[in-house]
Image (cartoon, rainbow, N blue to C red; front, side, top):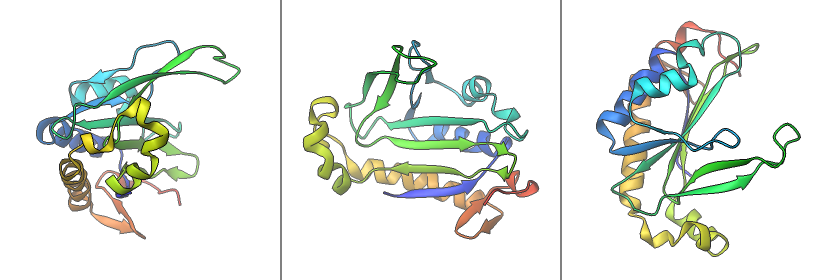
Length: 186
């Protein structure tokens, strides 16, 4: 599974989101909705920043934003599924979830008491998805319905952008300019 682990915060998020909305030809959704709410689709960087209050992620509150990027040229086989919440707080509620074999995950994490938490991108591969196809074919359709070259090219462009905009490395993790000003969690 191709992934990129990196540190980012505040304006770093915005330049990543600008790339996604302006250059990657992706639709952007929450990974999963709030209990008993509809899944949000975002149409701009400003919508994501406002919804998740990304400009406050540098304060030590442990916030996170989980997004799913749908490269629309890769497939029409994007689905929104419903799941029953099992936690005591929301027992019996339902959540909507963005799913599809070739979706790209973007997890943005903020500061915690231990320092800035790492963010990551991640996506499945055709080989990995085929290994799971029998189990999930009913809900996700066929793996062959995805143009994997489009998925991989889109994910690579996103990851390369993050790496190229980073100022330094913390081990194997890229550190973007605004994140470099903060204490990083290990």
